[in-house]
Image 1: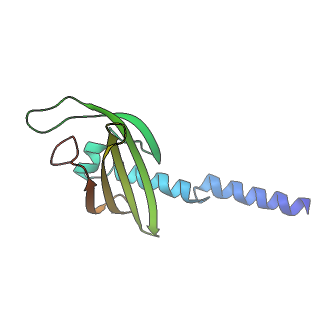
Image 2 (image 1 turned 180 degrees about the horizontal axis):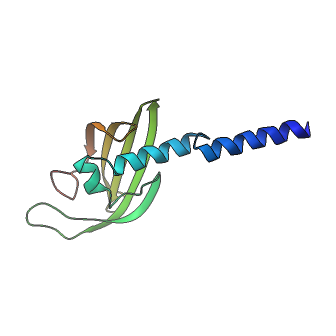
Length: 130
């Protein structure tokens, strides 16, 4: 019994070290590929949003003409592993104490290539083009 549990622990450790131990590693690889990829929108947003699932306080730049001051808010990142080669990266910014929000849904290949983008919510404070 003791030997079996030792073998199971050893196998789990080996999987974790190999990067195959669960969805957390796959999610992190997808986000690294996404933020480091060639999408201009992902690149512009990469300075605001955490590069791992979760949320942080952020200073959302005002955009448009004339340029507005930045807005204090929260920026959140989430990733859903859809298929073995697909994922959805969701970036949501909220401001006015959560009263307003804008969300980008990036439908991507797991190598970071963006296939399509859907946006919803209030207009992004950054202005059009984000």
